Length: 409
Image 1 (cartoon, rainbow, N blue to C red):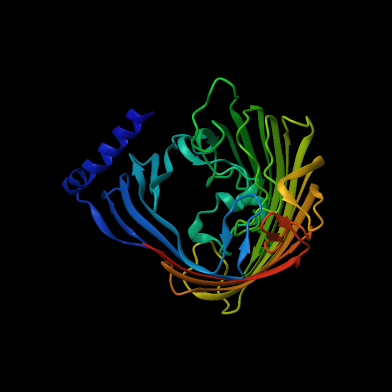
Image 2 (cartoon, rainbow, N blue to C red; image 1 turned 90 degrees about the vertical axis):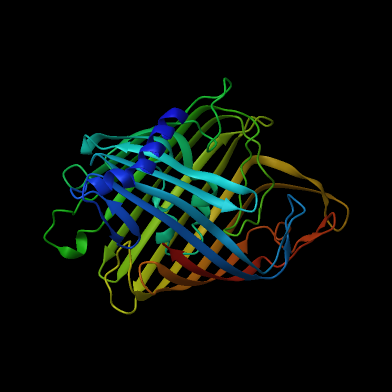
């Protein structure tokens, strides 16, 4: 696999010389590019910067000694390149640069010789939840939904057969893949592969009614037979507060869900539901995490809603909920209540509302502002519950203001 990527990389490096000999065309179309005259060879370097501001009341994690406070941060600094070889092979290499160095995000090749059965290999997003599949530069909200962040798989190493971008008959889209599991982790002898599949239907694509054409229904599932111990579930809010003790899992994992999207003119609505069930090594009971969200967007400046917006002012709203249940009470290790009694918890939940506004200066620059409020289901497990080794009843509501400047180049 490493040798294969090296060959691709060397081809890309040598391409500008080759392209010049072939009457290449270079320019800027939402990003810089170089391509051959016939369009069979394309090279696009790119970068993505997300600079964020978070204004929140200081809070303390319970599972760790970390705190949460207002801050500026570089949420993402992505650098990479993408393109096409011989008109049929797409490729993408992308890294995220952080304080600890560069982290590989994507490294894949897509063989499109059969449009209805394309083959993608490498490290890429698993065919599951639509919001996770959506590139970060197109997000309507500053943070993805809670259930997508906690449950949905993201980038992993594997192989997939799909027809994304080329629906069968214009209405049937699918992706079926086999992956290592655990992101970029190497498969070991004590675990099985992770199998993931997604099917999407556009039932009104051929309709003469314009307002129905962009409706999409999708369902997806994930199965792993032997998941090794050591990868804990972390039920958490969009900004990372863990509202339940970390859940050790081992054995079978089954996740299923579905989503819906409808777009008409400046308006869009989408919804999703995911249920994840995993075995626990200690209690032999299943840990169940399930959640949903409903999103609404509207361009008050009148533009049609598309993925690659180039102008407009948009208002957005989301309501979402995530629930966790481990089957029997578990002790919160290291803590007691204010009377010295041990604390146990079997289930908890968080409901979050987000209101926001997006300003698309152009395709490359976007400004976002979100107000977000969390409502916790247990007054002993909130960002303000912790007082040393005590957990005290606290306010179950917490508001936050988030802002982002996005630059794509």
